[in-house]
Image (cartoon, rainbow, N blue to C red):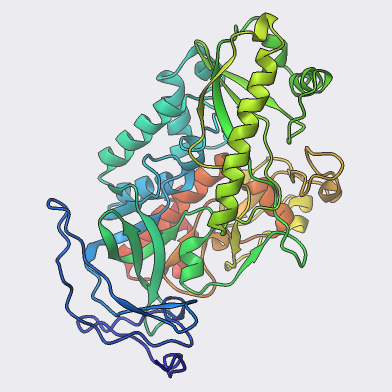
Amino acid sequence: MNLKSSSRRAFLQSAAGGVIVSASLTSPDTDAAAASEAIRVANPVSGDVLQTQGMLSADRRQLIEQQRAIPVAGNTDVLVCGGGPAGIAAAIAAARAGASVQLIEVAGCLGGVWTAGLLTKILDAENKSGVMDELLTAFASRGSEVARDSRGTVYDPEIAKLVLEELCVDAGVKIRLHTRLVGAVTDSNNRVVAVLTESKSGREAWLADRFVDCSGDGDLAAHAGCRFDVGVGSDCECQPMSMLALLTGIDAEAVRPYIRETAASAKPLLLKLMEDNGITPSYRGPTLRHLHSGIYSIMTNHEYGVSAFDADAITQATIRARREIHEIVNGLRSLGGIWKDIAVVATAEQLGVREGRRIRGRYHITAQDLAKGLKHPESVCQAKFPIDVHALNQDGNKEVSREFKKGGLKPYDIPYPALIAADVDGLLMAGRCISGDFIAHSSYRVTGNSVPMGEAAGRAAAISVKQHVMPHELKWDEIKG
């Protein structure tokens, strides 16, 4: 088979809508075989699947999959990719603004790093209104004394799962879990019109008038062909990932000096206890939190040099991180005394990823904006969290890097245009994948900022549909209400 073809110049069009598949979904040097009828029709009841066929290249390095029809699973006003803190806020806001909304999430729960990642602490949330304030109130009122004392910023992940599902369902959001985005489709006007997903239901297409990328890593925007930045320097160095865990078997009063909310001295005190007894955590700022009754969370792991886009690397990092957590807990248990019954309840389903893609938007937040305390007429929210670059490698101090803090930071605005994709129309972003530089990202990436970003993006998506304009054509006063 001749693998050289003219497919670089050819576009695949659907017979019904004339939709043009973006270059990211076609191979520049292969041509799919002619479509053939599927052997079976996918059936979620009987378990039948839509089978695929293909041809293996002579060097066995590529499999050329046959062209086939992809079923359209949904058609809504707004589609939100990613059900983490930004995504749930985007979906709720869009639905409350009157749009039909589809929310797609890869995990088996909503909440992202809050729930599947067992984060248990929401940073930079105290000065936020809207959905963020609503969530904090719910986490506090339905949580423990610890949750109430912290105004919901220290929360129980299981309560968070339930609250997020209830709010989305009550708003009328259509939720699809266990589903991963694998492609995006743009039309001849460079507007996003569909996404492709994979799940137990097979490969499916989802149509919408507006899209919001809340994937964290900017997956939707990348598939749509948007430009983006990763990490810092020519090697695209990114901040390390971390796995969190839930623990039990210790008494809150006995370990009070080591609990983060007690005092700033808790982290160095816990590190000294570990290192004095031969326990060497990969993160030198070990953080222990009391959630409720006999349940605690701990973050004491760093995974350096792992790409957010490399499934093999993430797999190995996950295995290492889980092993390290158990080794640390076993080491603490061996000390006896107040630690004699400490045990792991659960490790996170997913690693906490601090950095993925930063998608180019219509405004680019910079370190200079942070230094001067940017005031912007289209401010989504004000961010106050400090510049927080965790060590980029294992050399020297393994907590945070001080060199990036030199320019300083004042409370600054996150502008709405930073949430609008620069390279395609009909696409907004919210969360850590918005447009900014490496230093600015280290501040705005925390989840207390992700929620108001998502709320603004969701409302903008819904209102732009109602007014038949693109998101970048909206006036900010029309969005914020």
